[in-house]
Structure formats: C-alpha cells, structure tokens
Length: 110
Image (cartoon, rainbow, N blue to C red):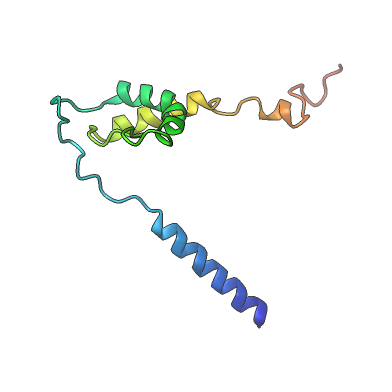
C-alpha cells in the first residue's frame, strides 16, 4: 500500500512538472519584426545550426535570443529543428556500429 501511494505521488509530481513545461501560444507569430520581416525556413535552418553557440553566448550576454519569435510558423520551426538535428549528427544511422553490432548479413562469412 505504501509503495503504490509513493508511485502515485511521484507520477502526479512528474505530470505537474511536465504540464508546466508545455509551450504556450506565440503572440508574435506572423507579426513582422522591427525590420518588417518574418523568419522563415532558411533563417530557422541557420539559427538551428548556430543555436548551441548562441545558447552558450546568451549565458554571458543578456540581449541574445536563441529562438526568433517573429516567425512564419511551421516552416521556421521545421528549419530550426532540422538545423539542430544536422548540428548534432542527424538521424543516428551509425548506432548499430557503435553498439558493437555488425551490418553484415546473418549468413555472410567474414
């Protein structure tokens, strides 16, 4: 009984923490910046590439943002995530070689 109560409390705590991390609406979406422009796919791709460096620099400089809020929506988000994925190594096609598994077929001789 005590274990199930502990598990229930931990699950509820985890759910409340995750609920606090959910993103809200972006009121600046589809609103032009000071220069009258929207950030699109290509700017999202570039900012995804440089995001790790900008994050480190933003720890020391208060006027840097990691994410452009004046964007056109889904295309900017796609470019940003694609840029981050390319920076951090992509799709993970080398995982089988890192784990010691071979890409050679079952019946092949070495």
